[in-house]
Length: 113
Image 1 (cartoon, one colour):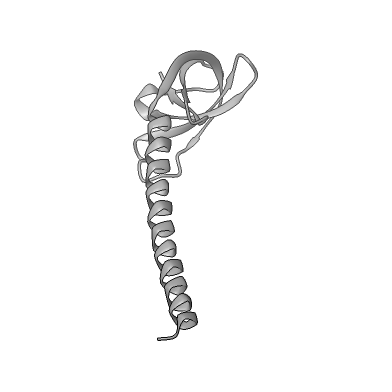
Image 2: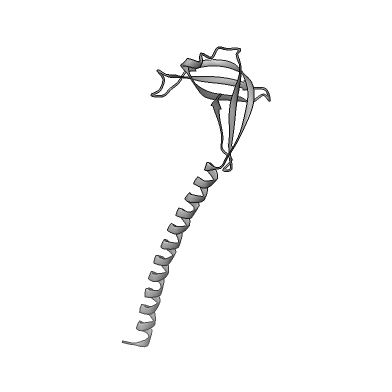
């Protein structure tokens, strides 16, 4: 085999190996990033906020027979939608307390209390 042909073949083999290594490194990085995001979303800081019920509607879900979608205007002016069981019997104008869940990932969710 000529020297030039051997160098081309060695170079082609090297690039193929580098592509495989890069693919493995990217896959591992994606898995680690997924675990980091899950961990950030699992860390939650809870606090109670007060508000007033503005609207009570039907929940667009398979649990519509048991729950309601309740729009609440918080005291700081924000509007949020929470899910409440029908047994709680919310009415427009009721003063309620909801829990604000701030995740470290930046996501904010609310639950009925």
